[in-house]
Image 1 (spheres, helix red, strand yellow):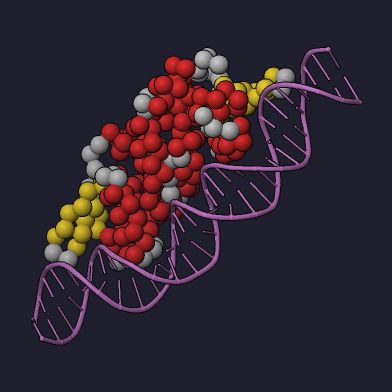
Image 2: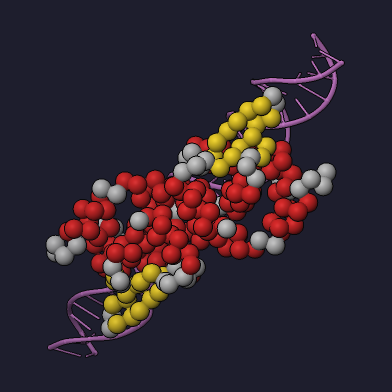
Length: 101
Length: 101
DNA sequence: ATAGTATTTGAACAAACATTCAAATACTAA
DNA sequence: TTAGTATTTGAATGTTTGTTCAAATACTAT
């Protein structure tokens, strides 16, 4: 059957789909989506502030932002002891804002 | 500290965020995102066709669309032995198309 | 140096997950 | 009825995942 030959080829070259799935998966978690939600409203927030707002520990926030950072969905800025995170400026986040506006 | 009193209250009432995280999580999987990608391009596809295109089994497609169906991201139409799935017409899918365009 | 604050790390645990397989269901056609 | 096709189901598998905890790191101020 060659009926779907074209779309099969198109799919093979769609490596971005896998990356997109990974990004969506990372954002598809309550804690991490809340963090993104916060960062849509504040230009930047420290780990401690996010933990305070979310009512959780520094550890879960740190683990969470690390995953977001690994996929370049957030940026990191360190000032003295404090680490501030902000939403990265990319296409994914622009679309994401449409979801959680 | 009452610095974040307002955003904490806003977050509490944001029940949609959890639902959104669930939807993003379901779509944040390679197999299921590929299915959505296919359904963006074809008005509807049968389980067998999707399995053929994706190079996988009927079983994984069936399991996958079931999850999408449970969150109302796809619709189901049965004709004779064949079951056709199509993308549901909702806000989530409209934005999703922005991701996988 | 020490004490204090902020964040990160890594191991451990249980819970959730994707995929496989075989069996079951649903429907058509003869 | 039977045989054939399409899909679904459920159990089992190993893998990944989120959270917890305690310890470690990084920096500031004294």
